[in-house]
Image (cartoon, rainbow, N blue to C red; front, side):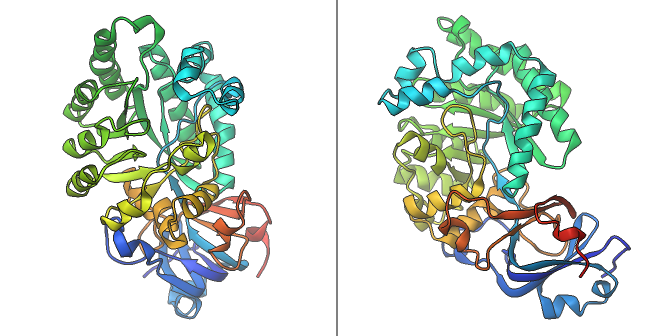
Length: 428
């Protein structure tokens, strides 16, 4: 084990959540194993973890002796959150939708009144790429300050070739500047735009034959997603688009069974999608198919909370040995929440996930939901040094004190990118 002059030793950790252990996403009882160390330490060199574990063992290592110490003052450290499902590029919040929903107007009715996804589309089309990038940069800072270190970011509010590429270029512009790591997803099949209302087949061809090839040509996305649900895209339509994506070596995700039991989860399993997201109406047969395919179920409880709708059956999914992940679904219409700590709390109180399961679902399993479980999501030697410091003494306080941002430091690739209390600048 070698270190350089850039080595840092993070000490003063009351509890260190590492999720060290077997490779692969955690499932069943394995989701409860956090590999927790009381009085922990992390040794970092440049962007990698050299060692993480008990203070006594890590501080005794030869590379630790010359490392610069950062004292975290008896706080909790855990892997940086990986938010595997967001829609963060938009021009305006949908406040009218919010007001209508409070009075009892439903998802479908709001769309029929000119709200919903298509209202965001109209404003996106009128907004320049630099403006979109500037707004996304501001939101990115909010994610970082709440402990998210890796973010999946979808398009889906352009719904024509030019506008979808504009969104993805805005994402790429911000991602290139860092420090948040961004995973880009083309969601051209988010809804059928007004101009194609009576020409659905033509719009499917546009997504499959023009958007996907253009995205590949310009290297703008790693994933392709489809909103496979009642009133949006059928299983057959979704399959056509996703098979095109797979043919050009893009990975796929699916918005599945959110509004109804539409067949999205089964399609995700059949195509061996990396993840199937939402799953509010998933069945036992769907669960069996997902387990066989290795697809990660990503649950979105903050969206259910905001909409007042049925939650996904987290306990049943976990009991079926599925590696559940959690995400915010940050978007302007149905979940304006970028705080994964709030997602933890809702998952525990409303879906009855244990705190340990929820932590695993927002870190290691979430990393696998964006194809990065081999280098993110746990604090072990050789992995990327992405972690967060919470201003609590026990990790269970994070969801317990809900609606609060406990994060006081975010470390990305070994660099302190957010430091509310100035801990990194203090001499120890």
